[in-house]
Length: 190
Image (tube, rainbow, N blue to C red; front, side, top):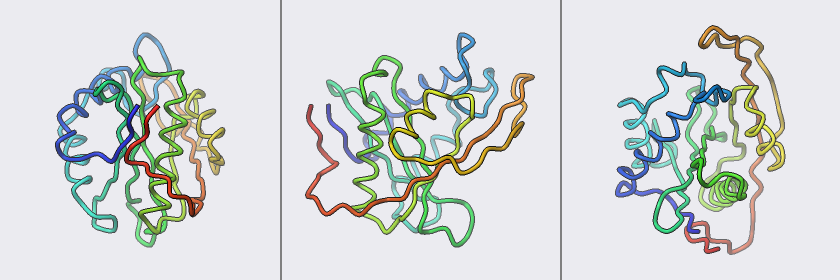
């Protein structure tokens, strides 16, 4: 397995992977993992633009995003990204997003991606906290975040009404620990 920082050349394959993943949102009566109706669970031009534009920007520039990609046999099987909060005066914090291809789940890749983004963030940024939002019914993701040191900070009951159902939204956060090791996130071999 190889985990490294995403480059512009990776985006066509990444968008194919992301389109498959987004299409799984609520598929086959599984719980939603994005606050989007099942019928609207597809990759949009706005999403591709946010990723394309974001990874080309430096941290601190409006719309920045940094993303690590996980590869097995040259194919993208997971991603994790951090990006700026929209609110002013939050440059010391970042928002997290992640996903793992259905075929690669249950092998510890989510945990490895988490460790990698925290190592990368500690080594390359001044970000002190990483925050995330998730639909509260996404218990698989909630357990992963909890096991990797995130703390639940808040829950908004009935935040969304999607496909006729009320959905609660939870916020979690974790402090970035400065690591003095010589750990290199760009290449991880298994």
